[in-house]
Every structure is written in structure tokens, then in C-alpha cells.
Image 1 (cartoon, helix red, strand yellow):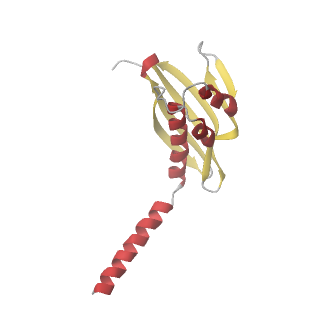
Image 2: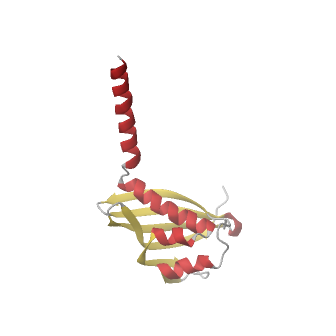
Image 3: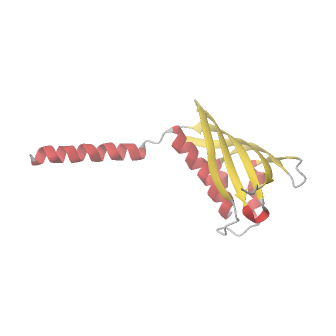
Length: 148
């Protein structure tokens, strides 16, 4: 009886440990986007850099609402002037993830209550090596946060 119980416990433990270590594409994508969220919210440029492919291109809006094209390195540099670890007022969440093979489209909402802005970011992500997803392109627009 003890050996049966021990076998069941070992089987359950093995099953649970395999589930913890086997991350699917969506988990890996969420992890990479979370690096982006945390890095940009707390000025951790190493996390932002981990989220982006070095050759990524970003299509943003400047203060006048005009197209503003940046390389990933230029975008990361924007956060270097801020104090690392200090919260910058960004509240982020993933709205959707669509995966097709080694390519994904991620839509996120970024809120800046301090400046009354809501951004919608659209990320194109690619599995650049096994189990490593990075942002290869980002586009964003903004609007005033609407009162509900």
C-alpha cells in the first residue's frame, strides 16, 4: 500500500514539475511582453532590451501626433535618463495575443493617468531562437483617457 501511495505521489510530482518547466509559445510571449512592461514602467533598460530584437523598428507618435520612427536602441535610450527602479506611472495590460507558427501579434493598453493618456501598442513578435520571443516591430497611438 505504501509503495502504491509513493508511486502516485511521485507520478503527480513529476507531472507538476514537467508542467512548470514546459512553457508554450503564449507563456514565452507573455514573459517577453512583461519584460517590456516592467522595463518601461520602472526604467530598467536591461528588461526593455531583452524584450526587443536589436533590429526592431518602432512607429510611434510624437507630441504633435505625427509619425515618429525609432530603432529599438533609440527607444531604449529614452529610458536611460530616468532613475532606474522609480515607477514612471505606466499601467499596462495585454489585450490580445494571436499566434501563427513562430510569429505573433500582441495588442496592449498602456495608461498614463498622470498625463491623461491611453496608448494602444501593437507588437509584432517572432520566435528568434527556440523558446525566445522578441519584439521585431511596434506601433502605437494615443488618445485622452475617457471619463466613464
